[in-house]
Length: 287
Ligand SMILES: *[C@@H]1O[C@H](CO)[C@@H](O)[C@H](O)[C@H]1NC(C)=O
Image (cartoon, rainbow, N blue to C red; front, top):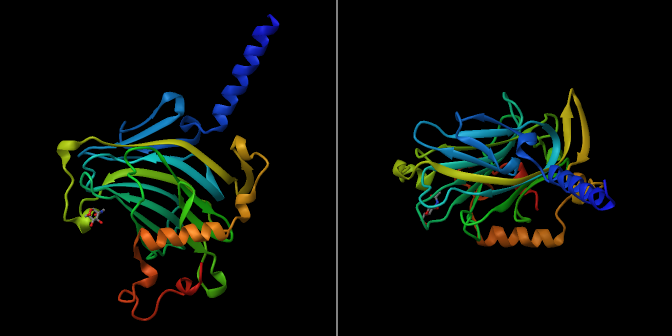
């Protein structure tokens, strides 16, 4: 081989390795239901879920994680998506599961999606916060992230924190840290409750509904045979496990307050009617 072709070969090899590091749905997830409605495309770079009247679809990560910082880019169902729900969450197995949820509730064309979030610890949730977004989530891909480490859980959108759930074990609030979790995602019909409380129904003449995924990245401690090994699969932060002790700095706290002030539409921590005996203890911990 000439010197030139050796160089070319090396270049090709290194770029294909980078692609592997960037995440590949063939390697990272299993499509778990939907009878062909979930598809991995473009050599593993793209995944689509679809929903029609008979069924939705879903996938889950092959790995289980014991703490992680996961990022995924999603492009939500466009047009009239009323009644559809796209979920993206971390969960341990039931019973008494821990769960960190993002759910995207569709809407009529031109009306805003709701981003619904919840945190379950030991099978108990009731910690909903809901938001509008500051962009149209159906036009382009945007990054939705969940940071889960021993100190806190942070939900972010395009790097902007929208919610923090602090470890409040010292106030008697259980925190997810004993059970490994997988990433799950699904697209399904929930027109009994999703859009305007169930008043707007899914328009099946628009089916199939499709949501798209790319650039899954997990900085994570992978759980295998009862042991956790922390490494990064991301080329950009190969030697960097800063996420494992990451907490919101003052800039991030400012951004969080901006989102909460301008885009939050429901917060269980201010719903006194729902908790007449007093708000849950984690609500009095400032963030
Ligand atoms: C749908 O749009 C209506 C009207 O703007 C809004 O009240 C509602 O919060 C939106 N989202 C959902 C999921 O209903």
